[in-house]
Length: 335
Image (cartoon, rainbow, N blue to C red; front, side, top):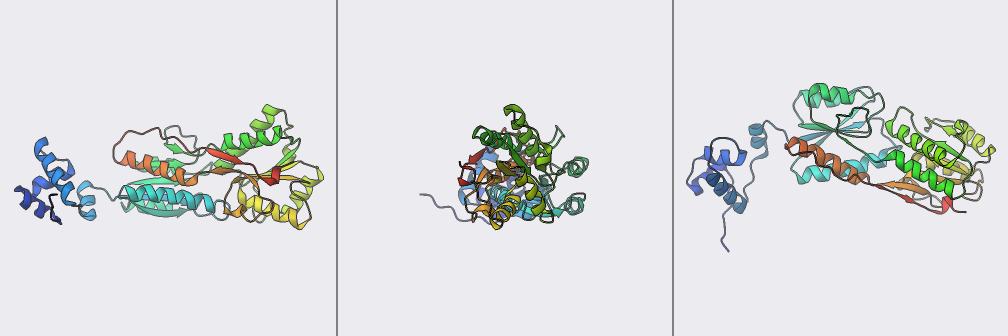
């Protein structure tokens, strides 16, 4: 087998092929007046000898940074921590495989200060924005800056490239499965109403209730639940109504509910059934195991990153299949 010595610079390649350095540079960049035959010969040689252009020089030549900005909400804590961690993992895997680095910007619900600094200092080529709030300014800001971006989470802007789980259908299907399984009355505990995901899941809950004839009792729907909420009062009111099942919109809320029920001697599922969303590690230690909707957040991050890189590289927007969801039935809803 023919052996090729390693080429470290453009000058090495030019000397070996008997051409000037500018010709090699044109072949690599794809710019300039160069015959197809010469370009093909140079690129074939480069591939065989394992030459990799210096990343800094390449970015300067192409006016690119090969950095992607990942915008995360700074309030992401235990509620969404597992989701964001897994999603970030998927983004980084695809970015790394395409020779991009990821810079994380933590911004508040009403501020774009940190991502703005990365854009203004020309530190990034594009942005992935995670889970916008209903009134988030990020979409309008990025469009104004004319920065390529992909949004993870729903938006009313029809021109924005969006990647998301079908939260509405997932909550509708979970609710419908519980109703067809014998549940006659149900309470719902959710997070912040201004969150797009929360609103989508609430819509799915009402969809199933309407389709299957379950009463739309808004007094059994509690939104904006967090660690500071008076959960004892909420659950006392719910249990006084003799509901069959409590559906929690995320695993953090569900974990709080499970602890409260166990502490107060409420048997699950004998006295009340419990179901949740995301199936994260927060639920792993619960007894009994909790029925939950499982989303693939890693794949969600992969798809979002690939869509952004396709746009940055000038490739057409491919219709990637979005990750689905599974309803994992466990002991907390049996009987």
